[in-house]
Image (cartoon, rainbow, N blue to C red; front, side, top):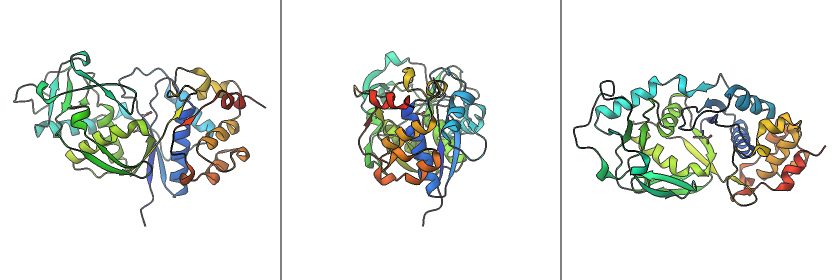
Length: 314
Ligand code: GLU
């Protein structure tokens, strides 16, 4: 039998969590708890977007309000950078990373199909001439560091989404590992923190499937074990677009502050997770009891106007 899982909830404190984020978190939490696993909390505050919300209230407060719990204190990514720096040093000493001062505009724009937006591909022709600095401590500051990628397919078997095939070299090329602001990129931070906190279960939205391929590249270069992944489809709005944090009517803090009952939110999340009898759910324990990963929808679910109106009914 597999060892009990250790998973993590990894919110980015950028503008408050919405119902789609909450749906992924409660499903992640429930699956781990059903399997006797640990749930860690990690605040991913090294993202390139500016941090606009206070993570203790907007993020942790609303998750507690829903009834979620986690084991141990939250890990605040930006507060513990030495392990990430060490990984950069290791790769630099092996000549696998280089500095880059090119702006996004200078790079070829390619569509990132999973994310519905654009991501710049860094082609190998753009690499600076060798030799590359091998010691980041003495290298010029204020530049991005990129990892040299090799052509080839990265495949993995996702516990939910099935077999996956990506070619990071073709899709994004040499991707950023360390930013000019002096912080690890999401890809590096995720790999290092999952590893050092013993995470062996990663459950998240399927917009991150292509990131998983990049994270596998990094984990292999660093000789780290790979977790298992569950990537689930996102919640979409009525037009078929991803839910956006700027839409206030779906933000958890707004719903809580408007007096919406957390049971009503959990019933909606349960419906979106394929529960058999979501209408009977009053609290997170009921959610847990009725959760089944087998019933989790395989297609994106829609957040309708009626769903939102029902939240406010008493
Ligand atoms: N911080 C990411 C988000 O909020 C999640 C990343 C992950 O689970 O690896 O979308």
